[in-house]
Length: 229
Image (cartoon, rainbow, N blue to C red; front, side, top):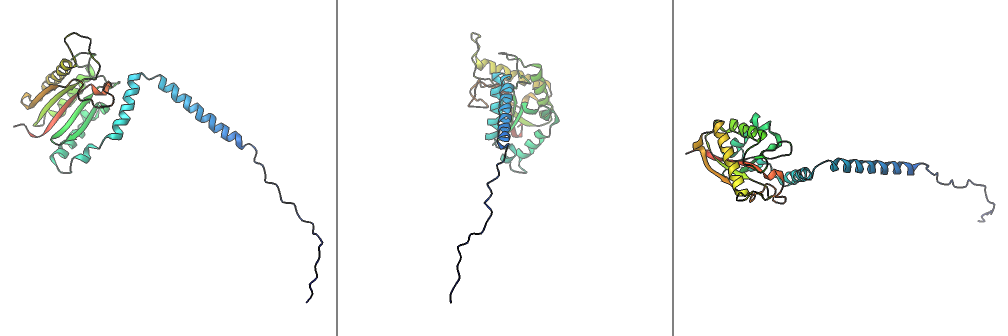
């Protein structure tokens, strides 16, 4: 069978060139400028914060990242869990906000009253508590006075050395611990409940990586499990 062939070309449509989207670069440039403005705004805000405050903010993020929730360390129904729950429900302590840190330990619950930029706990280089610090200890006394648990008090300092001759961070931390004891007693805590009142200077920083931070200046109240014998 024969087949007819032809070489005639039919007129066809030329393929269309891809359409060029105009203005795309402008959107990218606007995004770049927005990010740049946000960066300079952040730098401006940070420049107004003191070095001590910047370190404190950084420490809070590190502590939050490394912290284990206190409730996770206290099995439900245990004495430690009951004690922790009681302290967490205290309106006086909740009002103190970030100035109070609760930590569960094998033999009790630790109540750290810490120095912050907004609420300095102590007078500078002095064993005396500031007005805010005295109010914070009084709030702790309101919560602890009705309990029968034994208590220990620790005074802590930052790592800065004192210029006062014959008076080091050891004396300073001891004076602060005893000042807290006196205020707790004035707030109704039975003196017989105190097992120890100790000054630990800068040997137990709350943030070991930043021993000079304000948060390391604190009063640590250990509420032991079991009633005072």
